[in-house]
Length: 270
Image (cartoon, rainbow, N blue to C red; front, side, top):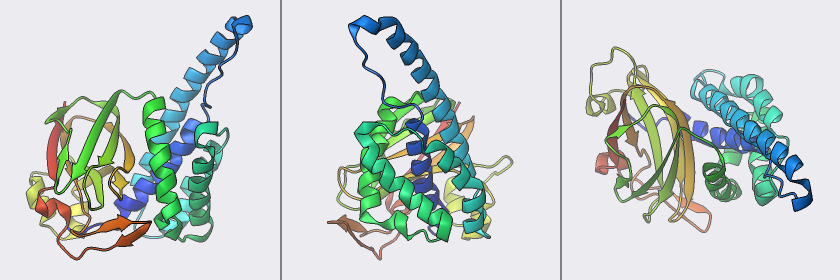
């Protein structure tokens, strides 16, 4: 299966969605000793807001996963962007500038259909700040930290519990890496090795794309959030061997995708 264009697009818009999602929660209110009751009430409201925001993010992530091959720009504008606009409300001071950068990219894509803003170095830099912030401040059923290097994933167990799961992906290698998680659709009997050998269109009919996270350079981090149900899953890196990001400039590799080199891990959700 060749590198499909939708995982990276889905990842980047999902990140924008999550950015907006947690904006609704705000950063918290320190308050003072003379207003403890008010502070407790505010904290309780913020906790509820965070949970509501995380639920909203999941809805947008799912919407991005369902982006059709035909007329994706129309789908983005009519289905996704109204959600992003609703989420772009209260920016936490810690990541306000970075969130503005990401939302601006999403807005441009929604208005023009031009996805190039998601390829800009400033977007990747903003994402590298916002993603860990979201991982640390949002309430998920499960949190998993995974790293990638030439050419393997580290930190993924053979089994994972069900529920809304956040995977914080860190690039510990020299090349660019990503983690794309897919599950088999009901009734699919082929193993993942067999599925990866199929033509792209046929393979995509047999799997569900759960989400993806991209970390273009050593030390970069990306966030993947998905609702995991019981079943068989695979984590893959589709980036061509030799691809590197230096000083904001990407050098496209011409080698086989990383999963061919061994950057593939399977796990079961129970």
